[in-house]
Length: 191
Image 1 (tube, rainbow, N blue to C red):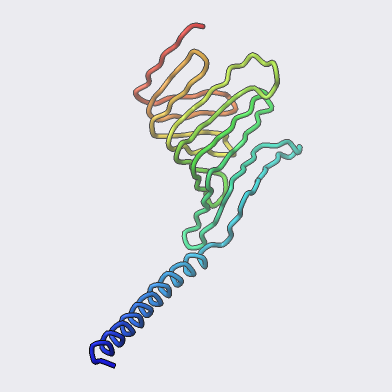
Image 2: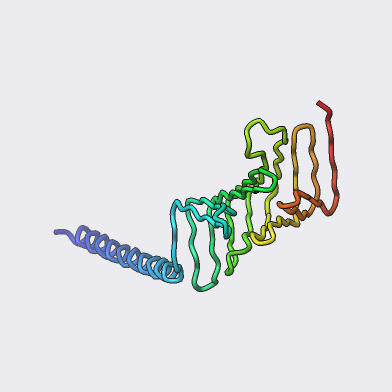
């Protein structure tokens, strides 16, 4: 065999061994990072439904989501694409909240929604004359006990013939009152 051919084979073999060593090093680092992330997750649920009932057995709150996980290191519970239903027996309406993601407080009383947040309120009874209301924003927090919605960013509210927007909001689901805080603009069209 010629010296050049032998040198080329040795060089190629050395390069292959070095490449394999680099791949193994990167794989070990990725595996270590992934296992440390997994070890910090207390639990992870997929395609779940969580329901809360009052003392009389009536549904107070329901949340569906494709994924939820709790991080033991930070104590944060993350939910992806939550769908939350709040039936309101007093007014016979259903309020539905949708978002890209949510963070649940440690006591599970507050949920902070973010990304394409939509709140829809409509009558739960067929044939009822009440008009549906849709609220859109990028960030929204709600308190389950007090049934309050709050936000500090742009809010857009639409109903048949009505469009209102403003910065910041407080809303009470029980009294059906919405208070926009700043730069409120509205447009009403008769039908």
